[in-house]
Amino acid sequence: AHEEKKFLTHSLYESATRRAREAIEAARAEVAEYETDPESWLKRAGRNATPPTAPREPSDADLRADARAEASGIHAARVQSLAVTMDKVRRVLAVQTPGSDAEKPTAGVDVSAAPSPLRLLNDEASAAHLAAYGARLASAANVENPFASFDALSVDDVSAAGAENGPDEDAGRWVRSDAARRNLREMADNLWKRSMEDSGSEDRIARLACGDLAYLAATTRNLFTPAASGK
Image (tube, rainbow, N blue to C red):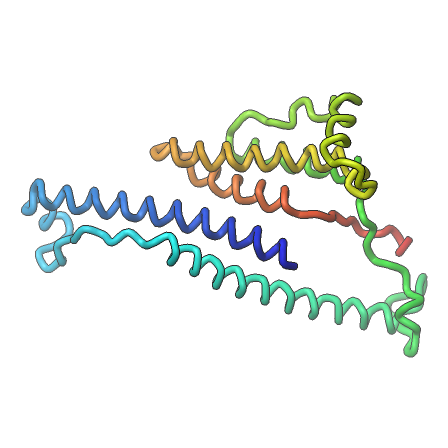
């Protein structure tokens, strides 16, 4: 939970910084237009419009504080939604005998005996899912797919990833998906950079949003899929 909140705060801070920079640039352009030709500006904005003034740039401390506050609110809402969802799942599992008709619940069933509704994806399945997701983001952002050759990940690449993780056996189990996460993080950085450079491009907003989604996917540790028939 702490790591999720930290990554969420970072993402919100980066987004807020970009939005603040864009708003300041737009306000400065408005001031420059007014100072260059006040009559033309008043004609466009209306005679009763208040002349624009030089914007105050928000401090980095304010942006970080706002990001932490927003992240806390989002995190609390996610925890609450998860609690409500788990309570509903518990209710369904408690009143339904495994394999029985859902329309004929059986009261008093031990929840601990109910099958798990989700299955944790292994390393290869997680990597495949992340690679497919990255490809869809690249298509939506109209950029080159960084996962075009990911399926051809060589044994040497896997060995190198394992060496990077060190002797940790658990970390060594996720070398392929960790490689996919590194690709997604790099993809997020590139998309954010492109969104800042392509200020007049129609793809700018899409690239900014896809960069955020790539970053969130890269920081998601575990991926699950529905378990068929609870097995």
